[in-house]
Length: 217
Ligand code: 5RP
Image (cartoon, rainbow, N blue to C red; front, side, top):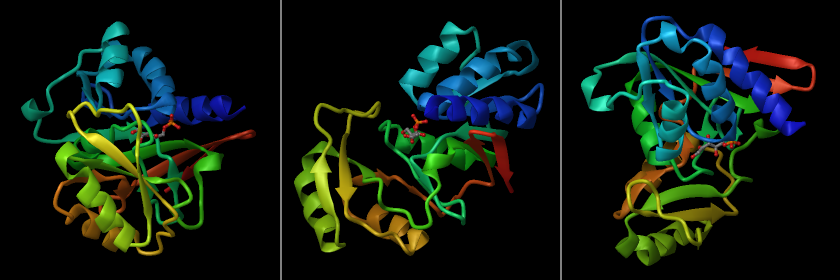
């Protein structure tokens, strides 16, 4: 059921993909459906910029050229999922540990289209533990600093990010001021990125529901 709603949101995103341009591609199970959809128009796009090794492998397997982000100044649409999204289109991301590259690719895109099933919609961010990518030697220090902000940081066992770092998942946060908290956590020495995507929020959200897909502009 959830997967069906993810699939609906992902395929609905095709309508927003301009032809003959580069497409930004996120990471996760919802995005995997989007990559399947994108493959149906692969001859009509220039290629994709990818946010993870996982998405890169799937894009290439389906014959979609993967381009180096450094070779592109700007592109029009980035499509990605989220772990939570609030009514201001602020998100928590990073459940798949790809948050840093996702934030980088999103920064170069003109439009961020978030594709989610309806279970991801929340009034206040924070029920989903906030992922924070950290330089390995700083993980204990950063965990102590995150405790001072009211959270409980847990090292994600057995996970190394595509950038060679670790993930701390921060539990028990109620994020009422996502823009401020995103900046504050990014200022802790040793943090590479945190999973609050609020300074650069989504522009459009496609929500998969049992009855179809809802567009939030
Ligand atoms: C990966 C992400 C994903 O977008 C997020 O975890 C949602 O994943 P899914 O589509 O599998 O529910 O941020 O780092």
